[in-house]
Amino acid sequence: MRPIKHLFMIIILTIFLVLGMNLKAHAQEIMGPSSAFDWNNWKPPKYIPDWKGIPGELQPPFPGVTPPPTEPVRWSAEWEDQEGVLVAWPLYWLAVESAYCAMVDELQDVGTVYLLYNNEVSKMRITEKLNSCGVPLENIEWLNILYNSNWTRDYGPESIFGQESDDWGIVDNVCLYGRKDNNVNPGLESLWGMDYYSSPIVTEGGNLSPDGMGKLFCTSWIRRENFFMGEEELRQTLNDYYNVELTILPLPPISPHIDMCAKLVNPETWIIGEWPSDDPNTPYMDRLVAILESMTASTGNPYTIYRIQQPKRLPSGYWRTYTNAYMQNGKVLVPTFGVKQDKAALAVFQQALPGWEIVGIDCTGFDGSGGAIHCSAHGIAHHEEVSFLRSQLSAESN
Image (tube, rainbow, N blue to C red; front, side, top):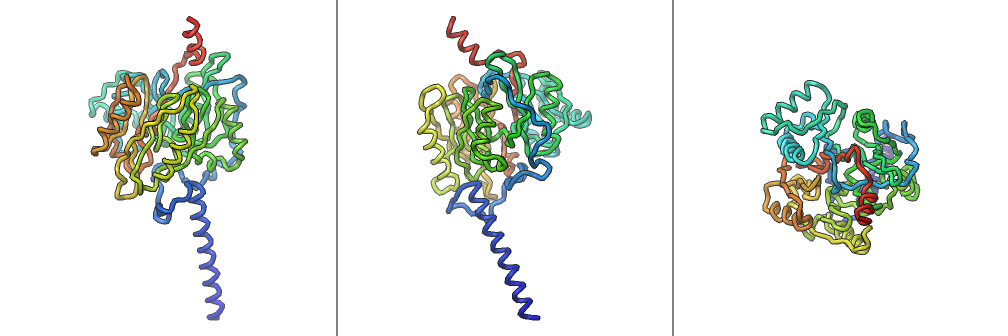
C-alpha cells in the first residue's frame, strides 16, 4: 500500500506544480513580465472585478445586444461641455463618504449631479450625510435606479453624437459588476429617451480614454476581457459602435484600468504617472510614454506629456494615484492623500490645464480599493447638444 500512497502523493504534487505554473503564466500574460514584481504575494484591490476573467453569468453570447449606429458617430471626451455627472452613493462604505460629500459639493457648482439611489431609506440616509457635511442640495437630481457598485465610471453611459443627425445616443457596454449595474443605462434611456445601443464589448469605463476626435486608448486588459473575439474583431466592433481607432497601451501592475496610471486631458496632452526607478510600474510606464511619444495626436501635433510623481507605495502593497482625476466644465477634482507630493501633483494639473480650476479631494478612504474620483463619476452630455465637429466647422466658417 505504501508505494501506491507515495505514487498518489507524487501525482497530486505534480498537479499542483502545473497549476501554479499556469497561474503565474496567466498573471504575466495579463500584466506583462516583471522580474521586480512578486506576483505570488500580489492581491488585487477588493472592490474591483475578478481580474481572471468574466463571471459565469456574463459569459457570451450576451442578451439584449443591439445593432450599432447606422451613421458615423463621434464619441465625446471628458473635457467637453457637459450637463452633469452620474454618481452612485457608496453602499455601506463609510470610509469614502466624506470624499463623496466633497465631490458632490464641488460638482454641483458646475453641472447637475445625477445621484443614484436604491430606495427611499437610502435616499434619506444620503441626504442626512450630505446635510451633516454642510453640502447644499441645490443642483442634485435624484435617480431611483437600482445599482450594486459606486463605480459609475465603469458602467455609466458612453455618449456619442451622430455626425449627420446630431442625435445624442449612448453605448452600453457589458460590465463585470453585476446585473443591477448593467441595468443603469437602460434606466437612463427610459428617462431621457436618447438613442440606445447595447454593445457586445466587455469593458469598464476606467479603461476607456477617448480623445473626442476618433482615437481610443486602453490598456491590454481590454484584450483579456474580450477573449471570445480576436483583436481584429474587437477593433472592428469598437469602430462599429464608436467610430474610433484603438491604441492598446501596456498594462502596469497598479490596475487594469488606464485611469489609474495616465490621463488624457485634451486631444494632445497627457498626464502620466511616474514612480521611483525600482517600482514595478516604472518599466511599463516608460514603455507607455515611448509609445505615445512615437505617435501623432488627432490634431496632427505630437503629444505633450507631463509626468506626475505618484505617492509612495503603501505598506499593504497597494498604490495611490493622482491620475484618477475627474474633469467637468472647467473644474478638475484631483485625489490627494495628505502627503508631500500632493502640492506638486496639483501644480502639474494646473500647468497642463491653464484656465481650469484645480481642486484637491482627500481620497485616503479609497486606499486599497483600486479607484478614486474618476472611478466614481461619469459625465452626462447635454441632452440637446449639437455635435462638436459641426459646431467647430460653423465657428470656423463665421
